[in-house]
Image 1 (cartoon, rainbow, N blue to C red):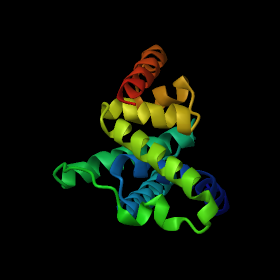
Image 2: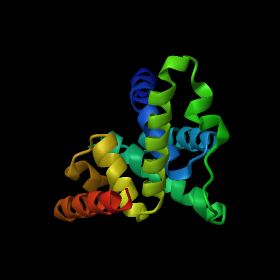
Image 3: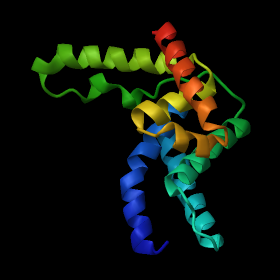
Length: 165
């Protein structure tokens, strides 16, 4: 992959990778660091391999997921606390939108809490399938599990999330 292709790929996928990582670590600074680290490892990986990569997006998500796992291994797993900088209410400028923003903030907090209270595997699958529009086949490539198993896990993950909400 040439530099121009990589820059285009980065611009296209960095917001989604950041969101994926942020939903897993709940820290703006750590999410930025882990996103950068994932792209750096991806760049190194694609330049080290001679053969063509079938699905670069799946490889990138796999690297990002592994970076999050390594992050938690380095830090002993602690209770996640929402970063005060990320409070949506602090960003409200128009008073007429206060109710709408408060409801949105409440919904986001509820969804984050529900995601944090289901299996890590289910959390990943929900993010990949429903937020990043990955197919079961693509998730299968990331997780190295059969596509049929992923379809079942998508159903179970959604059921677990609904139960928490």
